Length: 212
Image 1 (spheres, rainbow, N blue to C red):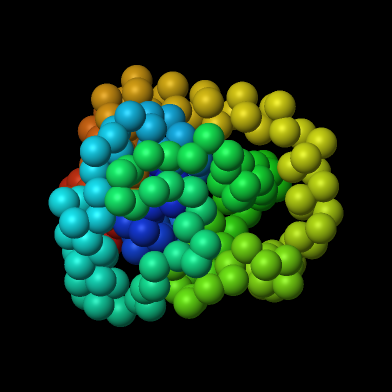
Image 2: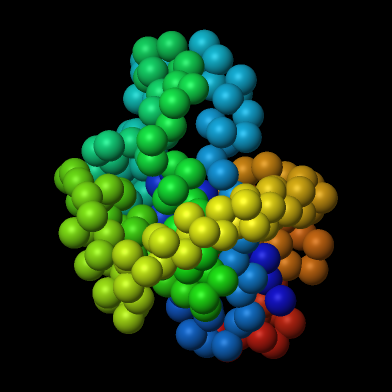
């Protein structure tokens, strides 16, 4: 069993998804664990981090990773998190991230957590704009045989339970010894970041769970 910690605001979570899905296709049991973005869990982390000193360097690295992985990458429009990139301050009002996470968790409960994460993340980070528009979310769900309107309605009805599940994932993540995403946990070892994927994969190969 592999625990996979994922955030819908993390480009690096998006970059690793095809490789995690490929592992699942090869028979590796993946336990999808959705968490709220760090900006929600720990907004103070971004205090004083502005575009010049923090975000611009991150964007350059993201573009480099996207090119290496052969994946499209654009700055999300809109950003799933409303945040001032010049001060790092996270807005109190968040119109997107909670509905997005609860939709994703409901999708997980219906057996499509990783796949839905890929479809929606591919719109958030792989298209120029409009990922949050209803017709695009409908299309993303339809690609998996899901009805977006029905799934969204269930997410609203089950909101309290979904919040509890996500908060449990966050507790489990802390117990595993880290708060970062993407994170893969195998045999009590936390592999943080998409650049640790090869090391993680080698551990599976060493245990004869994957062929070279």
